[in-house]
Image 1: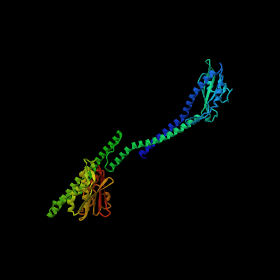
Image 2: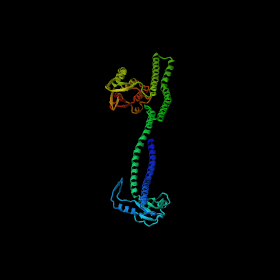
Image 3: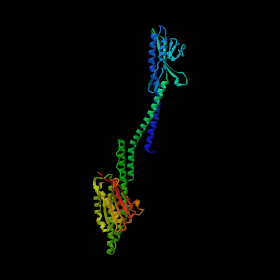
Image 4: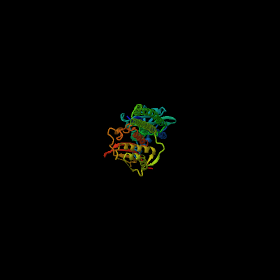
Length: 477
């Protein structure tokens, strides 16, 4: 499982658990808050009606006749109230009045007059001078029949002579609660979608720098050109610096070991030839033979010098992470310079050299390195093209890149060698001399291409011969 997926799963789990608990808590709080609000308004109503009843009752008792007339009159009124999602067309307020013993003397529903309510909490506690309230279901198993009662004392001369209790059914509140819960759930879902998108963006914001750092590490592993990515935050920047330092340390050790082994391997054969020729020169031999052995010593010494020079150049290129001083280079001029450097060798080998294209195309890079890469490609083509053949150096643009192409009419590259031609020290015998080169020319070309953000390829042409292509980004400024 990728780090991005793990982080996303973790965030989703946290959000799912937290969102579920928070939404559940919010839903459980809706009904109690509505009921508290309703109870608070019932307190005001009960106190107000008890105060009115005190003014209308005879001394030492309570009289509910005024309330009876008021409820009878209210039943004659038609009205319609739109309270958010609740439509109200009738009064559902219930009121009953008891005397100081808890016996009902008035009931707005007409069902409980004469009954003893002294054991109900609203009546009992109020007669004791405390806050009296109760919640009762008309049908025990049905929440829709729940009624909340709040009572207030009726006083005469400072003495409680009765209780007025106001009741309110909760079925209207239930409708409002259902609407509120639906809205909370809808908000939770919409909020969850928005939060999920934010978490996805956050996960990408956190993971993207790590992925860039991973790509950088892989490029270093594959010996591709790589520049340490720009990373946000001190921790990631420190991690990137550590990667860079580790890369330098490992490459330094590997480079020393690699070049030591390479040098020892490549100079072994020339040194053996020089030693053998030197031993033979100590013996009596014809002058012609002596000159031959001296020529062998000189050629092998020159070969060792070439190997050392190329290794030093390769080491210098591999140690560089970026280009040095760059300039804007016209491609046609670059082609002309590379061709001019090898034109005498082409004339001596009786091989035609043609240059085409590049006009109006520009590159940005180090002119010396790019010219050296083209010279190596031209030299490689010249070594394999027989007299009378042709080598073409041309340039073409495609998809914001320029391709520098070297084509020849030689025998092409054997299929078994194509995957290895850019390996260090890998070389094929030259048709003219039968000897191999240092095997470092194409490796140098590859390093130069990578430094310029490009690639180099070698393939056989369908019509015969080989085609080497060095591509690099166009400079369109």
